[in-house]
Length: 214
Image (cartoon, rainbow, N blue to C red; front, side):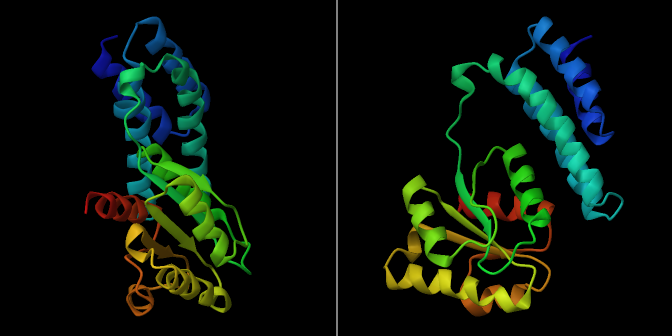
């Protein structure tokens, strides 16, 4: 099987939520000395991107997307030890978490998975994260992006506080802040002075790529 066919098949098994197939084809890629980075990028990550579009079009929902990501990650685990050093490109770092008072994290987890598959270095702070923790960790890890998720209107004030504290510390310009979640809107993002808003995981990938390119 030539490399291009293998990439296509790797992409397909991710879309088809086929974890065993992803492992099998990734092993085949290793045996055939196919470049591991290319196999991840043009194969597995491409499949995750396609799954994201299906999610966008409401053909796939959260359970399907999680199964696709399981397949992708199973393949990545096989290929990771074979990545050449020169392929270790400089990655953009982002801290992500659910704001204080909120424990709904399926959306946040999806965004993290999608961004990891798009090549971002993700620092996941989990749920119920205080505004000061977001900022401390962003500074500590040298992140470019601070990604805030909220599923409850009662916790959206924490997003306001993150932007406010960044301004108070005179480090607002060091970070791009993006917000998302059920009750959040573009209007709210504009109102609090965030750099962007994403409606779903696929949007978040597009937004973050745009923000780091600026």
